[in-house]
Length: 332
Ligand code: NAD
Ligand code: DAU
Image (cartoon, rainbow, N blue to C red; front, side, top):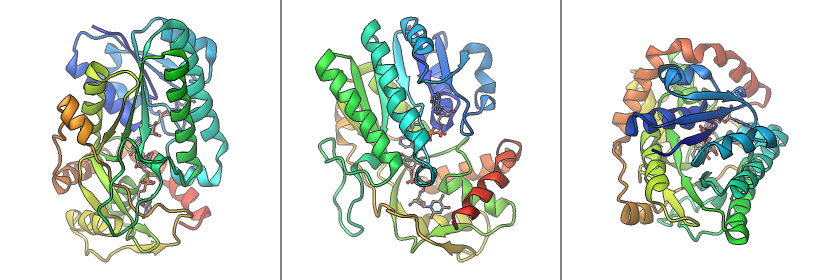
């Protein structure tokens, strides 16, 4: 079977991907390259540690990346700085990891003629009107609103150019918001779940009307596996479950699943440039690759995710206070 190189494989989606890929191909060879930033954690891979090669390192390290790419068949590129609020505070690491890192990887896959799957995000398309039925498609115009999404957009442009200019065999996917186990406590759902578990009040930005489309991380990763297996080089795929929820409604659901009154939260100042609504048309991947979300029922998936955080306080507790201190410093 193909030897996979997974960048960012110690992060939330990457670590879930590694487990899923090994489950799909039990004898498969898999190497993880991860810089172990604040968002990367080797504990995320503990269950599969003896089945993978873990290389601590930076995707901007051209020499290291060249050797790893040469030795693999397919690269799946998750490594990135991923949090919008952090990017608003300090964009520089985003430019380095997201743009320069993708450039370094592209040069290596070009030199060694390796297949690349690049993980992008629906955030590159910006904001949809709050009230409406419009959805992002593969042809939507890029219109990023934050330093995070601008650097993801820049990375996508590099991938598209390397496909056209050099014939690099790359695919791209754009998934909507993910949720599930091992997500960093800085993100919306883990932040609110762990606040409630600690007896603290959740924090809702602005009016809470903003809408996101929530996809279980295993469904995202199943889609990535489908694309790696059968995606057409040069092609782009949007991934989303169709479960669109306002932040306020999702917070109320979270509170009720945790046995708290649904109004037991604080509102805090809004995020600057806060995108109003994301919604994706995932028709292409459903039609062409037969992908379907296996966890489309958000309340059910959220209840399981809450259980995971309840049972794994050892995993999230060490980061919680530092994360909340960062939020306090920016007034959110
Ligand atoms: P994450 O922040 O949890 O994990 C990112 C991982 O990348 C970490 O393990 C980190 O150590 C590693 N990393 C960062 N910079 C690196 C570098 N320079 N070299 C090597 N490793 C580095 O992020 P996530 O939520 O798992 O997101 C993974 C990817 O999926 C990102 O590309 C993100 O843009 C994309 N994405 C995320 C979502 C979501 O809802 N979380 C949705 C769509 C797309
Ligand atoms: O759409 C895909 C994107 O989803 C990914 O590309 C990003 O990597 C990922 O972080 C996520 O971006 P968002 O900005 O949508 O996710 P976040 O979890 O930061 O916030 C979700 C929504 O909840 C957003 O509208 C802001 C709001 N929010 C967030 C936090 C942390 C709150 O209301 N309160 C909070 O405490």
